[in-house]
Length: 331
Image 1 (tube, rainbow, N blue to C red):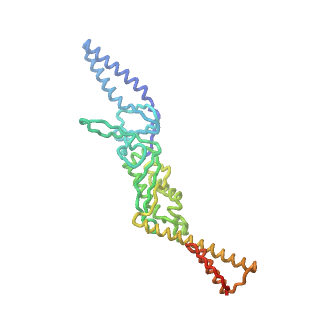
Image 2: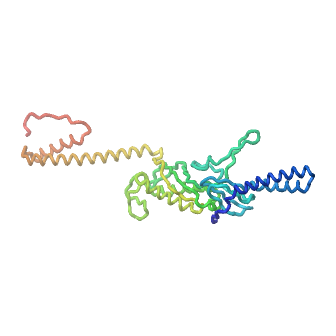
Image 3: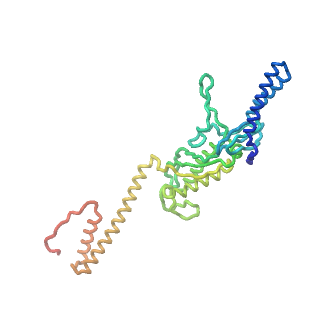
């Protein structure tokens, strides 16, 4: 389905003036015909009044970034876009299959609805048939997905999107909002399962056969870009452009969150200990070299080993060392 933009319909003000003038003349004709008993004039005025009532259905008002997809007896005739006062064939019907669909998103979910009271005060929601061409944001519910290592994680994304082809959005899919939401969920699962939550060894996230350091936590921009491209490839047929996709929530699932926290803490402790040991060994080596350079004291191998052991205990211990003063001979 190819979009047809109707650009020569912006004549609503002229038609409204003609309708008002014809309405005044028809009322005057009915009055004059009744006074002078001109039956033909009365009938003609009534016919004109009926035509006027039908013609008013062709007056359309659009705000900026709005569109109307019009069909005539089931056939697509075109789309009117842009702000203005339009007049179209009064038998044309506006089509918007997603008018009553409410997702967790911004835009035309609530602002484009009209509430009317009928049946003794009962409120009925009348959805607008206008399509919003603005950039809108879709926040799908958080999903629980297994990463490439099988660890369950919870992730949520925000997708900004807009309609670029109204004909495709209305006619190529049953409901473009629900279609977009479903494709976002599917694309998110396909991309997330390629990455580990955190950097893991021997994991290829790019598909080139070489292990890399990609992860959901450390490569969020790259992951978001791949999610956007995946969604875009799926919604092209719906006339939708994906502007951006962002990860809004990322965490381990509750059933393994505590275990993974302990794992991260253990890894942090090991890294810290490695740094402490490296520093302590360097300090011991420096101390022995300085003692030899200054020729302060001569130590045999056994005493050097004892000194190294004592220094490492002092430098690597979790608590302050309690010194023992030796007042006797070293040997």
